[in-house]
Image 1 (spheres, rainbow, N blue to C red):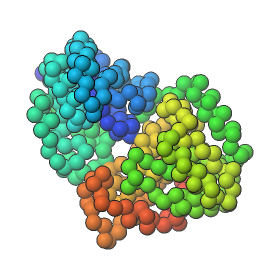
Image 2 (tube, rainbow, N blue to C red; image 1 turned 180 degrees about the vertical axis):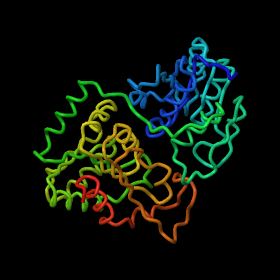
Image 3 (cartoon, helix red, strand yellow; image 1 turned 60 degrees about the vertical axis):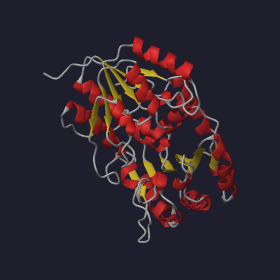
Length: 352
């Protein structure tokens, strides 16, 4: 008989979008081990995205600075994890410190995929008791499926693919979202716009975005909330400066918490975006998404929602077939036609 685990730790010290995708594993764990308590260990900055998640019982955010010497903090984290007496650890990252925490906290069964984000092997796997083979095709296998393959491989069962979900936004945050949308011109469609991602290589040129917004505003009754990090605000203002009707876009980059952002996305009529964590939040919330991608990341990172359009082109001279993070250039994005994005938006948001 397979062992019945009761207290499971999932380490996921990765970026926002990856955490959203990795949260799908909680549903698998609850189905395989219905009596288990499932705890996720994530960065403090992304923890709110897991609030009120129906399959996650607890979220912990270890207090250490990953790129600085913090032995005292690490000892405290290890002691805290040890006190919680986890009997299974599933690693959905390949970070050294979570691996050390699980080992020194005495978690007897520790599981990791042989590869999670790239094709390279890692010495980190030697700190785990079970190393699960993940899919070979990193370019066309969705990242959520790669995460889920770790759980399914450990349990030794096949399971239908599970789409990520997120918990409901609070009423206070939903009311705040309504207030922000109310600041837009009175338009039939109120969309969210995101023009900057974590990696510069994922960004479509600002003037191209402006061209799409100009056409959409001219042809449809639509207005936009522009979201992003504080450092994205200048790019947002640059875009607004190129618009024929600048009042149609309200720049709130850097003005919202993660909880507020989740409520904004849940309240929107749709999202037009580059490949970002916000895209995965929107998809998990079930709103329509138009995602703009480089050729090597569209299939692996596409939004997982019923109503979405993925826009990308494949160039014959593309020099790269590996992970997006190591692509030497983004010609496939720079050459992506405005008309392609425009057609995708009209098809999804206006059924044209």
